Figure 1 (cartoon, chains in turn yellow, orange):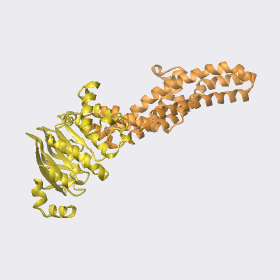
Figure 2 (figure 1 turned 180 degrees about the horizontal axis):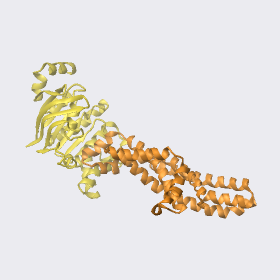
Figure 3 (figure 1 turned 120 degrees about the vertical axis):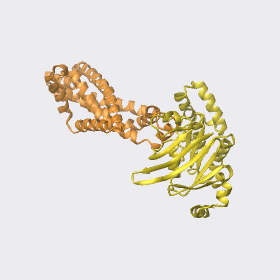
Length: 242
Length: 214
């Protein structure tokens, strides 16, 4: 089943054309890793997938529903599309537990007991049950990001978007977050991951998209894209980072 | 000293009026401020302008002129005329509302955009985002400036004596002219205001400590 279909996506900020023309398809249970130089439009691409950025032109379909059509309720669609941010964006005035239970209680009508039961399961999964009553300010970066993942998973999303989830972390914290993401991928979550972690992309990616200059320059299985890149720009980028 | 002791019961009666006016006006002022801040931040140009014109008009004119306009000016229209206490409450509320609106707007804008993005990405709509994520954080940040404006508004209520509201200042004026002990009476008046404002600040810092942003 096709989870995400992107058709001729364009996105401009004023005169600046960040995404010139991108089309791709993400199937159920696929893990797509998006790589590319900074400023290439890869984060903007990801943010168009749940319309955090207004789409200038083209279409994005989530499970067949066109999110660029204002008649479709974007808030409802977003409930199925979890997102994890580089800067975590946990709610600092709420405890870890409240961060995780807020959306299910407000949007799915779960009562407190049910929401907390679910939250404990998710906190177990990310290894942070004992931090349930802590505030985000009391956590390390890696812990914050794992809570952010639990918070997104609490809505039972069908797709998870990751926007450079490990870029703001101290190196020793990166592994814990990647482990959680790997487990999620193995469980069959459909994931789109913008990342600089080439190891993760090579190991977990079903496909890797190389984005540069507002286009998807090349997309392939990781073995091919990393081992046998077709385009000059892909080769140049990989030679710099590998 | 005797003059002070004799005047005290009258002044405390006036203090009740002052506090009554202050609390009602501050509550309505806050609601006006919240409404105006949300209009100002709304995506609709026309609503932005309504808010901007309101705030500029209030900030650009003296309190006493606003008071005279609302009490005497609106008196020309039968259905808008009100007694002096009501006019006083309305003026203080509107005046405080304009300043609160700027405080609330700045408070909302000081909250990192990532907070809204995280909330919206979970599926919260913009109202739920404001109510559960942005405003609770913004209010904590606003508390010190908010207290400041509340104190200014409390002091502004003393100007209501000019239109004959029997507030603390008006009682003081009556006592001063009745006893010819202006020094003692006005000293006492100042002390009472000082104590009330001091208690108000203490309450505010207590609340601030209780809701400290983690």
